[in-house]
Length: 254
Image (cartoon, one colour):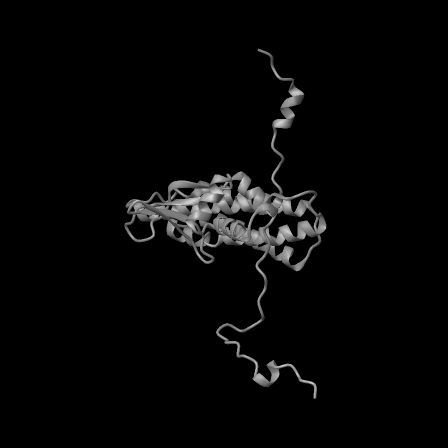
């Protein structure tokens, strides 16, 4: 049996994650952390007050690592990018602070971390593509709009799967992720379920299966993610009134 030369082994090393991919991976780590705390709170009578400390400290360290990776990109300091870095610094601070709290308080401090990380990934992705246009066809360009939306929901930690009467159901926030769409993503190796890793939908109900992005799913979404389009600037609770008929109709020539 011959041994492959050392030089050939270099080609088996995967490329390092981009900052956008790091952010999506970080969002998944926060989701796993939050799910673990939820399961402890719902299924354990006697809580170990130190059960979450190592995970919280690791998340804080990983968040600071992502911040350094973004800063090393030396991108133009737009308002959005500056705010993203500040938001990530806040996440690192909250994760560190949560290690000194009880599990319930710690869970609240990291509750919004997955969404914040995904939001930063979207803004960073747009800025990166603007400065360094991709060469060739990016993996995300092969996705449909519904598939991209589903991957974003998964990255935010919003998708779980449960079973009832022999049927499987996907639960998510808006936009809804259909179980059929989820199965397509799973068959393409972009998403995967972790059995019994998320809290039940109701008190005392069985745990659900959390859906996470795979490494391929992170790569695909990183090449396609973008912030949601901004709507009209309207104060909360304000209802837009239709234009008067006289203004809607175009002027007729006489």
